[in-house]
Length: 208
Image (cartoon, rainbow, N blue to C red; front, side):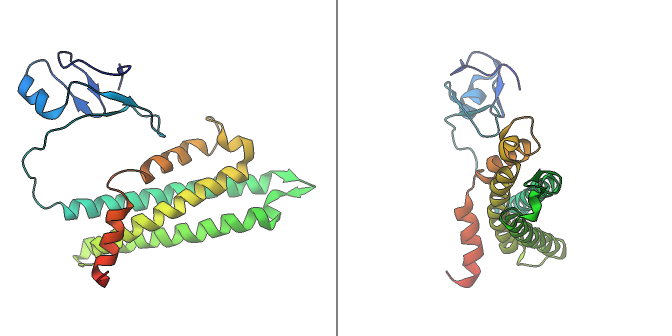
């Protein structure tokens, strides 16, 4: 999206920002979708976000399945993105030499990467199990999707942190091999609805 406003937009102008489009042809529709002021917001993903005042529309009905599918997709994406970082960091550890040997030979480098790989494998398997439950109509699908989201969120954030440490200064450069994925992981890990709803979905079948 182009033409992001510096701080606000006028309701009389036509713009597309924060995923919302205003139009000069329908003031009532515009008023119901978007307030006249949009405050620019900086995001970890460097995407054009803004804060708006919205009016509640008609109830769309039950959305539990949609939220569960969102958890499933997010869990699978985060697990894959985290694995991408671990793979890249592992390759770097095999090629980068220090003190006359690859840095991957040092336990302080190898063990954290191995821990990340195991946690990501667990999150990936949870996402696959949840997807299987949705395909077969198993009632545990929503619960497992929420668990996959929680597991993948924690594992991918840990993978991003560990990978940056393995890459060193190279990992924090925009053009480097880790920044594009770790930035996306941190952005998606903070998407609403947050982890609290996923925890409730996991604990509810246990009566907690």
